[in-house]
Image (cartoon, rainbow, N blue to C red; front, side, top):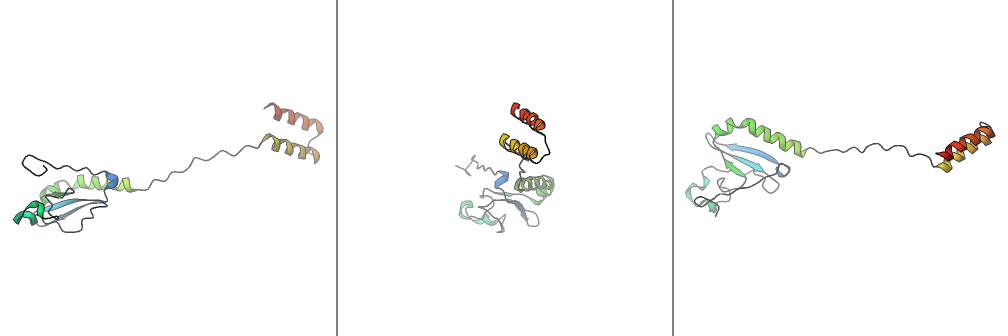
Length: 142
């Protein structure tokens, strides 16, 4: 049983599922909250709230919430660089990725189109019959 003597509760949060990290503190104590779509935080988690009744009786007790870490202010201050790195990683995962398709090579003309162009050049007098026959032979041999 989680929470009983010797028990533990573990939760995994993937960067893509995390919407933010928030630290709420008083003068000495505080709570680090991992925000997700199903847990938006916002409510002030009281470090001492559950001390006068059963921990499981209070849904806002940071000691029982999976995505809350009661953390003294001094420890948070010592870990600020790590928290900033986590926030940066979350931000990178949230950036949209834009995939630019590779440019397509121009569609080559079909053999019939090329022969029609050669015939039009011959008919207009740009190519002689001999030049037309030579160009046609080259196209057909490819």
